[in-house]
Image (cartoon, rainbow, N blue to C red):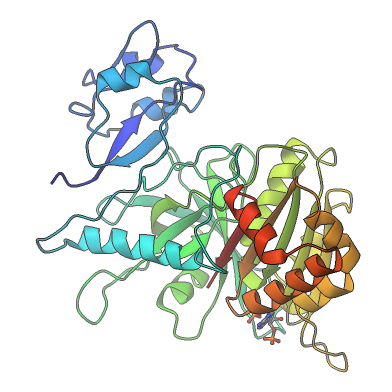
Length: 398
Ligand code: A2P
């Protein structure tokens, strides 16, 4: 059996046939006919010289394959093939890289396993690049900033970390995650297992058109990776894998309405969605509604910046559970208070739901959806299943 590997490909829908990549390639791996520009998997040595010269980014396409796509197949393409599910290699002892890759896949599958079933990407969404870097070949990023997002009085230490990839290609879409490899080894002398973090910046960078990304990371007591990240200083370097995730993505359609429910650092993908919309369609979008749960304002990541986002773009419900003298309130409680607005969103086939944060909230949020759907004579489980099949229902919990 052939070991799965990552094949470098060109997206025929985006490529403008300028042949700059072909002229740049030192080893003659790229060729073209009247139809397409293609890459020979037998020759490509992953030098990446062709990536920065491509004016459209169409060269930045990767698929993990058991058998490489032939030149003949690529010449026929009108669009990129979807990423096939690849069976893990059978038999033999797994290498560290295989163990690591499987651990990443398992982590992501677990995060996306929430409230029943396999999620699907929105029907129309940009195609994500996945698994470009792994333990064997991680990307190196340098730290551009590490800012505390929660008040110093708060016992919750949540950080906004900005990582730069310099000239290295690292394409991410809103909703995708990356892996961070903490330095050192575990008690068995093996490299530490990956930790997954959702990217909190949009595809064109934390700073527009700069090749950087941001993460939202909470320091966990005894957390090997979270403490490593939260202690990073400007200029430090970090080993990064990924990107990961091909379903928790935002729809292309600017008129799609987004209903986002999150707690704590689960706000990371919601921030990336909001920034994407802010930079592209602004207020002329279908609108976004967010229920965001935290202990109090001091421990709500991005509290200040969120208050400045115009209501017409993002309608935010900040929900606090530990305000002295006030009753504990969770996101699901506020959804019930806003029952009519949520019901109206549920009834709209243009609504996409995103849930991200503590696994514990799933049950309460499901109950709230059940009650609200019932109030408009809809059966929630059936609606949820339809939404999931249509790529309009997404859960990422941990
Ligand atoms: P709590 O005050 O009960 O811990 P954290 O600060 O740990 O990241 O949590 C973010 C928010 O999520 C907190 O307000 C926390 O409330 C809340 N939370 C905890 N459990 C649940 C749950 N089962 N459903 C909804 N929210 C929850």
